[in-house]
Length: 122
Image (cartoon, rainbow, N blue to C red; front, side):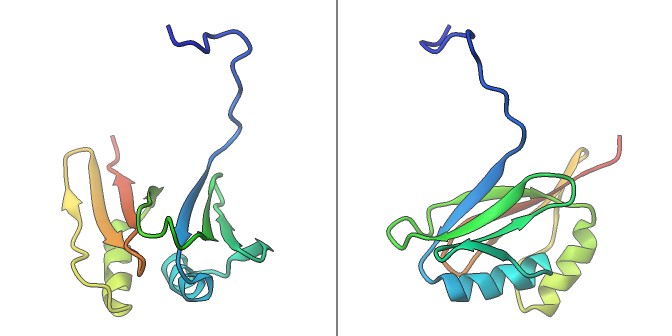
């Protein structure tokens, strides 16, 4: 049992992934092209996207941490996404296929890893 125990355990309502970048303006453009929509800027150093089924992605200015992050985005159409990536000039986007999941791993301009993940139907 951990030191925290189970007494008063927190309830998590949702999650927000965050990625540190060197240049927020450049990263915003790249992520808007990737996600297909404008980000919301709640603070000068943060741009974020909320997803329709919950959760979100936050890109924030922190040059000293940039390039060391990773996150997984669950998607519905990995083949359509691969086609879109090729149209955007992102290379090496052929999905890796498994009997339960298909994935594409890409890196943003700062070197942060993004795993795009589509569960196969049961």
